Image 1: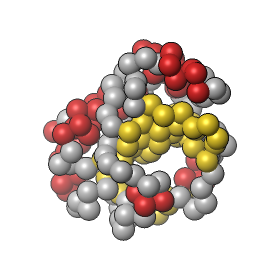
Image 2 (image 1 turned 90 degrees about the horizontal axis):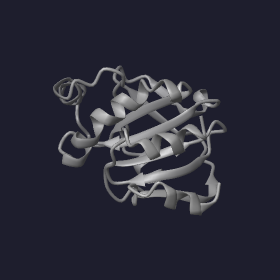
Image 3 (image 1 turned 135 degrees about the horizontal axis):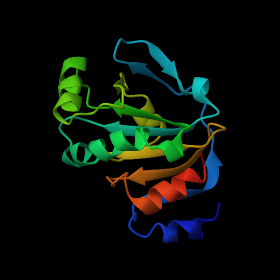
Length: 159
Protein backbone atom coordinates (compact mmCIF):
# COMPACT_ATOMS: atom_id res chain seq x y z
CA UNK A 1 0.00 0.00 0.00
CA UNK A 2 1.44 3.36 -0.92
CA UNK A 3 2.20 6.10 1.55
CA UNK A 4 -0.10 8.48 -0.31
CA UNK A 5 -3.09 6.61 1.05
CA UNK A 6 -2.25 7.95 4.52
CA UNK A 7 -3.18 11.39 3.25
CA UNK A 8 -6.72 10.14 2.73
CA UNK A 9 -6.94 9.40 6.46
CA UNK A 10 -6.67 13.15 6.95
CA UNK A 11 -7.61 13.39 10.64
CA UNK A 12 -4.90 10.96 11.60
CA UNK A 13 -1.70 12.92 11.29
CA UNK A 14 -0.03 10.54 13.75
CA UNK A 15 -0.69 7.47 11.57
CA UNK A 16 2.62 6.38 10.07
CA UNK A 17 2.40 3.86 7.25
CA UNK A 18 5.59 1.85 6.79
CA UNK A 19 7.30 2.10 3.44
CA UNK A 20 8.51 -1.46 4.02
CA UNK A 21 6.85 -4.14 6.11
CA UNK A 22 8.75 -5.00 9.28
CA UNK A 23 9.20 -8.52 10.57
CA UNK A 24 9.95 -9.29 14.21
CA UNK A 25 10.90 -12.59 15.82
CA UNK A 26 9.50 -13.81 19.11
CA UNK A 27 7.17 -11.03 20.18
CA UNK A 28 5.99 -12.14 23.59
CA UNK A 29 4.19 -10.49 26.49
CA UNK A 30 2.11 -11.57 29.48
CA UNK A 31 -1.60 -11.81 30.13
CA UNK A 32 -3.13 -10.87 33.51
CA UNK A 33 -2.38 -14.37 34.87
CA UNK A 34 1.30 -14.06 33.87
CA UNK A 35 0.91 -16.55 31.01
CA UNK A 36 3.21 -15.85 28.10
CA UNK A 37 1.48 -14.79 24.88
CA UNK A 38 3.33 -15.18 21.58
CA UNK A 39 2.14 -12.97 18.75
CA UNK A 40 3.05 -15.68 16.21
CA UNK A 41 0.10 -17.69 17.54
CA UNK A 42 -2.24 -15.07 16.08
CA UNK A 43 -1.00 -14.99 12.50
CA UNK A 44 -3.94 -14.88 10.12
CA UNK A 45 -5.47 -12.08 12.19
CA UNK A 46 -5.19 -8.35 11.81
CA UNK A 47 -3.44 -7.39 15.06
CA UNK A 48 -3.21 -4.17 17.04
CA UNK A 49 -0.75 -3.77 19.88
CA UNK A 50 -1.61 -0.70 21.94
CA UNK A 51 0.97 0.38 24.52
CA UNK A 52 -0.45 2.32 27.47
CA UNK A 53 -0.20 3.11 31.20
CA UNK A 54 -2.76 4.13 33.83
CA UNK A 55 -1.06 7.51 34.43
CA UNK A 56 -1.21 8.43 30.73
CA UNK A 57 -4.07 10.90 30.08
CA UNK A 58 -4.13 10.37 26.26
CA UNK A 59 -4.25 6.58 26.90
CA UNK A 60 -7.30 7.07 29.10
CA UNK A 61 -8.89 9.23 26.41
CA UNK A 62 -8.44 6.72 23.56
CA UNK A 63 -9.06 3.41 25.40
CA UNK A 64 -12.90 3.50 25.17
CA UNK A 65 -12.74 3.96 21.38
CA UNK A 66 -10.19 1.11 21.14
CA UNK A 67 -12.59 -1.05 23.18
CA UNK A 68 -15.40 -0.32 20.69
CA UNK A 69 -13.09 -1.09 17.76
CA UNK A 70 -12.68 -4.68 19.04
CA UNK A 71 -16.42 -5.30 18.64
CA UNK A 72 -16.70 -3.67 15.20
CA UNK A 73 -18.37 -6.24 12.89
CA UNK A 74 -16.52 -4.92 9.83
CA UNK A 75 -13.25 -5.93 11.51
CA UNK A 76 -14.22 -9.47 12.48
CA UNK A 77 -10.64 -10.69 12.03
CA UNK A 78 -9.15 -8.08 14.38
CA UNK A 79 -7.38 -8.96 17.63
CA UNK A 80 -6.40 -6.10 19.93
CA UNK A 81 -3.80 -6.44 22.67
CA UNK A 82 -3.68 -3.42 25.01
CA UNK A 83 -0.26 -3.84 26.65
CA UNK A 84 0.48 -1.99 29.88
CA UNK A 85 4.04 -0.66 29.95
CA UNK A 86 3.68 1.32 33.18
CA UNK A 87 5.14 -1.41 35.41
CA UNK A 88 1.75 -1.43 37.12
CA UNK A 89 0.17 -4.34 38.92
CA UNK A 90 -2.88 -6.22 37.64
CA UNK A 91 -5.17 -4.60 40.22
CA UNK A 92 -4.27 -1.05 39.21
CA UNK A 93 -4.62 -1.88 35.50
CA UNK A 94 -7.94 -3.69 36.14
CA UNK A 95 -9.29 -0.67 37.99
CA UNK A 96 -8.30 1.53 35.03
CA UNK A 97 -10.30 -0.72 32.66
CA UNK A 98 -13.20 -0.94 35.11
CA UNK A 99 -13.41 2.83 35.58
CA UNK A 100 -13.51 3.31 31.80
CA UNK A 101 -16.08 0.47 31.42
CA UNK A 102 -13.81 -1.48 29.05
CA UNK A 103 -15.73 -4.64 28.10
CA UNK A 104 -14.14 -6.08 24.94
CA UNK A 105 -10.44 -5.99 25.78
CA UNK A 106 -8.23 -8.06 28.07
CA UNK A 107 -5.23 -6.85 30.04
CA UNK A 108 -1.70 -7.60 28.88
CA UNK A 109 1.65 -6.59 30.31
CA UNK A 110 5.14 -5.92 28.96
CA UNK A 111 7.09 -6.97 32.05
CA UNK A 112 10.04 -6.54 31.90
CA UNK A 113 9.70 -3.83 29.26
CA UNK A 114 11.11 -5.76 26.32
CA UNK A 115 8.55 -4.99 23.61
CA UNK A 116 8.79 -1.26 24.24
CA UNK A 117 12.53 -1.57 23.55
CA UNK A 118 12.05 -3.87 20.56
CA UNK A 119 9.73 -1.36 18.90
CA UNK A 120 11.77 1.66 19.99
CA UNK A 121 8.77 3.34 21.60
CA UNK A 122 9.38 7.02 22.28
CA UNK A 123 6.18 7.60 24.20
CA UNK A 124 2.72 6.31 24.91
CA UNK A 125 0.20 5.68 23.72
CA UNK A 126 1.75 4.03 20.72
CA UNK A 127 -0.21 1.57 18.60
CA UNK A 128 1.42 -0.91 16.25
CA UNK A 129 -0.55 -2.59 13.46
CA UNK A 130 0.28 -6.01 12.04
CA UNK A 131 -1.14 -7.62 8.92
CA UNK A 132 -2.28 -11.25 8.67
CA UNK A 133 1.29 -12.34 7.95
CA UNK A 134 2.48 -10.89 11.27
CA UNK A 135 4.30 -7.97 9.65
CA UNK A 136 4.14 -4.42 10.98
CA UNK A 137 2.56 -2.21 8.32
CA UNK A 138 1.80 0.93 10.32
CA UNK A 139 1.91 2.57 13.72
CA UNK A 140 0.12 5.37 15.48
CA UNK A 141 2.27 7.59 17.67
CA UNK A 142 0.04 9.32 20.18
CA UNK A 143 -3.68 8.95 20.71
CA UNK A 144 -6.45 8.80 18.14
CA UNK A 145 -10.16 8.19 18.08
CA UNK A 146 -10.31 4.55 16.98
CA UNK A 147 -13.95 5.14 15.97
CA UNK A 148 -12.88 7.56 13.23
CA UNK A 149 -14.84 6.46 10.14
CA UNK A 150 -11.90 7.02 7.76
CA UNK A 151 -9.57 5.02 10.02
CA UNK A 152 -12.00 2.08 10.22
CA UNK A 153 -12.49 2.13 6.46
CA UNK A 154 -8.71 2.19 5.91
CA UNK A 155 -8.10 -0.57 8.47
CA UNK A 156 -10.81 -2.80 7.01
CA UNK A 157 -8.74 -3.09 3.81
CA UNK A 158 -6.26 -5.22 5.79
CA UNK A 159 -8.88 -7.39 7.51
